[in-house]
Length: 323
Image (tube, rainbow, N blue to C red; front, side, top):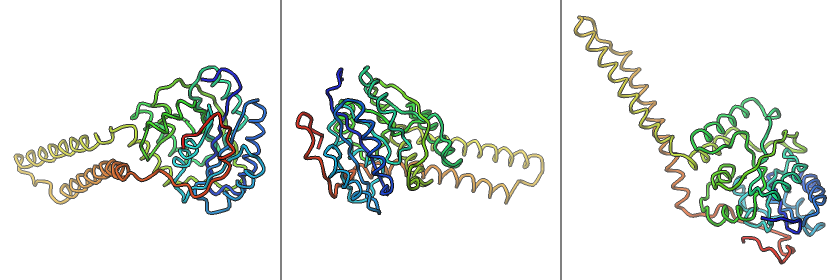
């Protein structure tokens, strides 16, 4: 770990349809980095935007040799865009930050200070989510709670805004070959020394949020299947519940028969069929999620493809990226 200021800091900025705000974001981050007294580079990863995000970032790259930009061939998702940035970052410390400036760049000097003090990973943790809608806050809270409880890793109010030491970056890039990733969980899972900073979520500077209910749901499924197999035990649990239900129905039928009463018929049968059918469908869904993950992994396709890039040939020779 670094003990003085003569090191390179890489800042990875994943961007999707951020044409309106990418220039302001990069300029703001540049000003903050310039005040640290450290060498720096900014890597903008255009995740298959439908607007001119790449061209806007390319203009910044032409004006400033420490800004680098790459465009992925299509929208692979934020996790893949962050991985692309990490694989191409050459810094002794690498910071990931959103392009919408909801992650405050002013926190970067504090991150670097904690890194110099010995932290391998510096997590920026959200104090609140007041800027999010109630459904989104509820979805994120539920997802983080389930991952923390079932997966054994703490991602409560976690964000992708974090600093990673070079050793941590190399481990994530080279020794964790999985293609469907949940970076917030992986950085805690590897077990390196961690430190925390807290921040309030800022308003978006331009554009609209790209997160939808379905994208959050997809991310939550990836996170759960990445870090725990406990949901598979739901199948066993539902089987036990079905067996208990069967005992109760059988007991009710026997009780009615021996007391000369009519045995419950149509309603009981329909209820049992609906419950058992629901249990079976839930079980198949849980198993299917894990099978789908296995299917995606064994195909062996790359997590992303780079269509164009610029500025990487200007990197200082003393540090090479993991390309």
